[in-house]
Amino acid sequence: MITAENITSHELIGLRTEIVESTNSQFIGLNGTITDETKSMIIMKTKNGSKMIEKLHNSWKFSIDNKEIIVNGSSIAKRSFDRIGGRA
Image 1: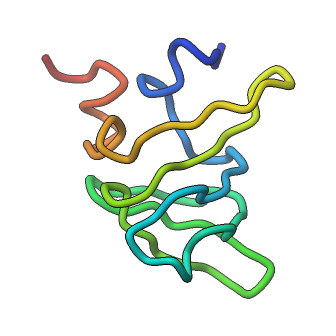
Image 2: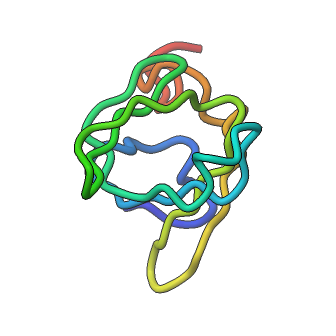
């Protein structure tokens, strides 16, 4: 079960997210559902189509159990397999 404490160790695909801080001001406020991820990118479906956004230079907001959680991109900038415990 995804919680605020373990979100960085969980699968992100399927979660709704919004960019709340970014080195690129055009990304702030961009939101949608995560459809895929790589080591350094999140692919999300937005109302204007799919967007590939770099994880590292952005802060991501997730809503889990009616709580808003802000996750710094550096804490999720790994392959999902490595992040969820597939490798030490």
